Image (tube, rainbow, N blue to C red; front, side, top):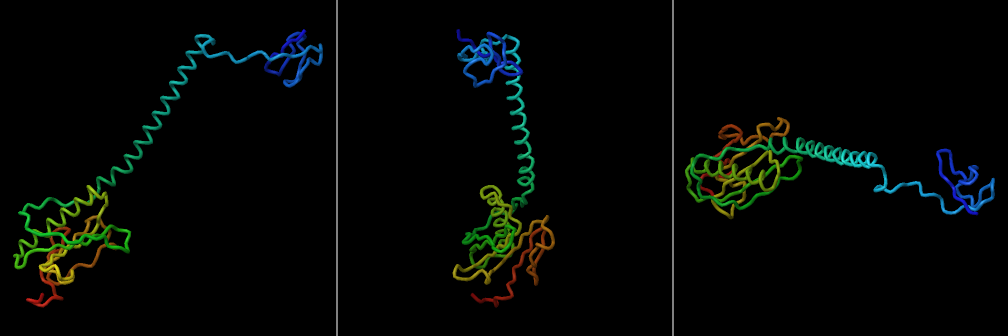
Length: 218
């Protein structure tokens, strides 16, 4: 008469004679009875004792809770790492003067440096007073930096702004210019100043006298 193999901690045994048997043995080596399909040792989850099922559910909930806590902690680290960089982006206050008429004709990123540096060229009407030229430069610097921070997500550290009275002229023939430098930029990365008759006001240097252009020259 066939019998079955019973799995115990020390291995498989013949159910009929309790002799030790190999897992793959077709017959009992002691009584010679044929082995049929081994007894199913894994009890279905819904047939386990109530206390065991409760422990299993609690363990599953705990593992899920731990995973959520780890995920939130990692997210917090990412926010803490990225937020200071966004918060420390340099900004300029909005100018209090009226916005003069000007039109930006070119904005380009200066290559060859790990720093984000911009050059902005704008066209103004001929014969504007120095106060109006300075106001135009203030608005250009403010709006350019604000746009780069909000839309381009680029931390700009230096901006050169040039005002031209004639669209056919090159930037070197500027009527007025300004250089803005992030106050936190280390000295070794700061550009050379405009020099000459340049006027400093905080982080901005203005120049309204172009030595490379003769008076009245277009």
